[in-house]
Length: 193
Image (cartoon, rainbow, N blue to C red; front, side):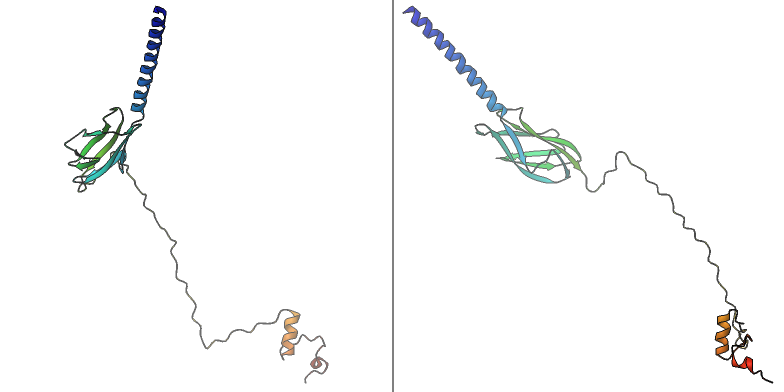
């Protein structure tokens, strides 16, 4: 009988160890599966002073949804309000702040929004201004001299041009002009007195 009790106690201890290990694994697994999202929000956002925006928060875990907390790292710059599953961010004054949405079940799981609040009436100067200089463009054109045309005298007559080639001479002869005297024309045969 004592043997059976020893075996039963060993088996029970073994079962308890296995059960506790399985329980530890499921709780850590549930914590690691938690995910926090803020619908419509980005990791880096810019607000103008006085801007107000509302976002829906989702916290998902392996076993359904869980609760969350929200806070601002700089309450003078950004104020945050929580109502149900929604958060409202209000930009108060110029500066930077972080809005941290954290799961209650696993505080390591969070969604951080880096917010920069600017004054729209005062445009920001660039931190490293780059000077841009453009060299003046010179346009040089050569001066245009006026052209002069000699006046035409209507009383003067254009000089006659003497034919220089045989073809031009023959053309002139056929038109009653010059004759080269080679005997090809009838006038060469019968000279005029």
